[in-house]
Length: 465
Image 1 (tube, rainbow, N blue to C red):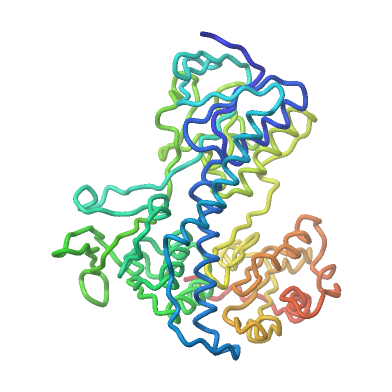
Image 2: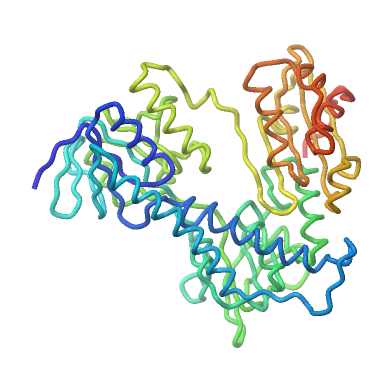
């Protein structure tokens, strides 16, 4: 059976449903294809479930720290993982069914369930159905990568998806990967009550961040008893009696880490393998990400790629911005571009790390004259009052234009406070606009103007590490 539409959207992740809503409102007929779970990674095995579990872990952590706040407890704090998962699943299901109901009730939108495959540049097969459209949007997302390391086919392991349904609390969880995903699970499971070891092949955690950020993150995790094995080369999975192990060649320490469960958190790969992209003339890079131009158009006319599958940002907020760029350009004849957006991300350990714009390392590498300001969270009243004074704030400013180049906040509320800096950057305003602002007391944001008022020249002659 063959059906024609104005547009076909493959994937009901962050960008797809919103694009369907915008196109149908404009009078387009839309087919949206989803093969499994509506809502994509964020709703089902990314932001929503992990942050729900982070909240449970935070509650356990605060309960154990009750005496710090004058709250006395008489029983040890324990965690019921089945209740943690039930809470998480309830939140996820509400979001998932909400997305699906919205799409199925959307006027001029037809929902197809199944795997989509290109038959030609403007034809998609879904089971026995052939769908035709001159405009096709790929929003197929990504999944956890499983590296071809020794032992991976012989030793059971978890991924960031499968661990979300783990009902038993591991006695000792070994996490391979010391970046965003791995560290969120590391702190989460340590607070649930597991022993945790993080294995990272590079010499420091979150290696793409500045060295002082890495050191700050490391200090936070180690203060909670998380073990780290850095500079780990030749990583391999092994069985060790009734347990599992990660073999490693580190500069220091025992040649293997033995535990009860292994979590692989070493990146993601795009879901582009079975789309039949060659039949449409859609090109990918060597990692399988769909190549797009600055307005998200692929190498095939009439085909766009949005979200994680285009390699332009593995975040919910970048996926949603992809939708906005495509919709505004198509419907409003705008000229929005990926290159217009400012990089922004957050690592949801506790306290969180928020990063916008350029890092200090990138500013130094640029060779431009710059100013830098820092402030420890021990000098932020809000953090001290909450008993969460770990971390620091840092901002970098162009010495000539006076515009903010980038900033990092590793500290309580940093993921929210960073947005006053981000808004100033998008406005193209000089840093003095923010440094002269009067922010509410007591907040983390109130000390950002103070930090900006005490900047010093960045020494670009310092060695880059």
